[in-house]
Image 1 (cartoon, rainbow, N blue to C red):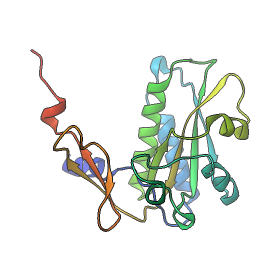
Image 2: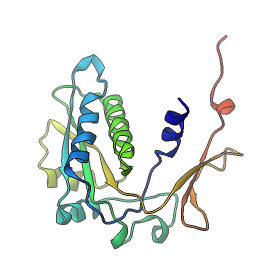
Image 3: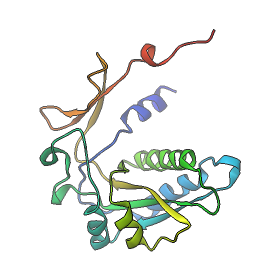
Image 4: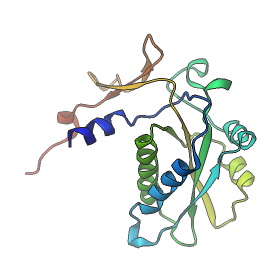
Length: 193
């Protein structure tokens, strides 16, 4: 269990990547992990669009916003730091109109499977969904939930205890690694009765 907890602790959001292709078998593992995720009433309303060709990745990247807690010059990946893969999570509304929980479980599985192979990820809800939906050719019965960026991280990310409720924003340390304040366990848990 200690190894699992360390694994979960280091599976952070990564926003700067090496420009190194992710092998096809790793991409397939990531997608299989999404398929294995639990689904409400087992309706399985999600589908996925894989974007891995460099031009297409660049086109999708142009519609994304990164690291809202940081100034753009620090948070937005530069040309040689961008992800090499996006996976779009699509909600199929004719199967289930309310599937945010399903999407969260699938994204969690994907990012964990990726991290198991040393691939970092960033879930991006801050994107131009109308433009991306048109680019992906989505129908009126489909809704873009999120795009998830993937790549081999070129930085580290660390958790620190949050000392006050005002200290929630992540930041970069002197090595430009991400530092992510998390509420302490005693601040988020209570036992009943």
